[in-house]
Length: 267
Ligand code: NAD
Image 1: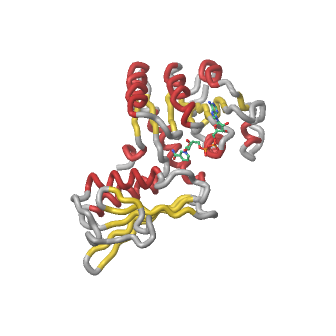
Image 2: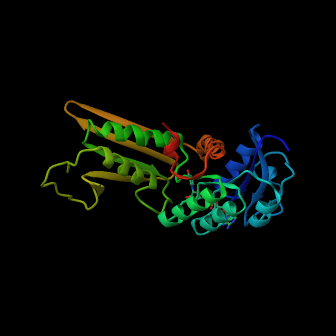
Image 3: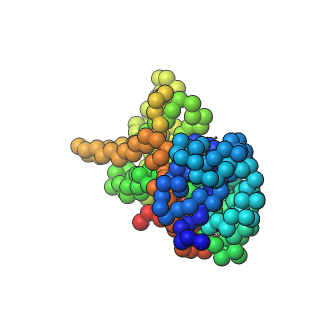
């Protein structure tokens, strides 16, 4: 067997899963062990993502793939309702989970960590694999120590259901840990049109812009005496998450236990 890292892609037919299949097929250090999806089964995984046939056919059966392929890592971008059971199954078979699917509870994460420890394997659950977005959060938290007056503005496509975005909430949490307590703005401020000042979080505001054509952007604007500072990250396409997924795959090969949050890999 080669020394490439063997990967099962779970959710291989989805928008993120297809990018992961492309990453794995085009990276010399990675090898596609199996492609699993409820849809598209029987199709060649290479052809499914617009590349040449690779000889791996999409299967709906994750358990057989885990049992039969001697994979090292399972990357999962499926749906919140199946991500926990997929992850638990991978760990049961000693296959390291690298999970991008959202929706895990703290109890599930703690349980999976215990199972990874028992199996002696590494695992990662990362609600955001974008290295640039993680850096934005870290830089913003650092800046908030010196510029406690700030507003977060996030931009997404107009079909996004939730607001603010998970990334904006995480940014707000990280800023709050570093920032002195302060309720900004005029104490008698009034909204003439409801919602004009955005959502309130721990003394500052978050604004969600929803427009067609936008993929994902976030800006933190800081104001101080006679100056302002803007930290901004622009995501243009799903491929932008793949350097983070690759780093996650490499990292889980080298430790034991489950890590939650990609920020732990970015010093
Ligand atoms: P999608 O709907 O395009 O794809 C999901 C795929 O999973 C579909 O092809 C579906 O058939 C398949 N699927 C569903 N249940 C399955 C199961 N039990 N077994 C096998 N396949 C199954 O969704 P998407 O846009 O690719 O997003 C997938 C997940 O990734 C979502 O939870 C999303 O929030 C998350 N996401 C995370 C990041 C990150 O950086 N971590 C980035 C983008 C999206």
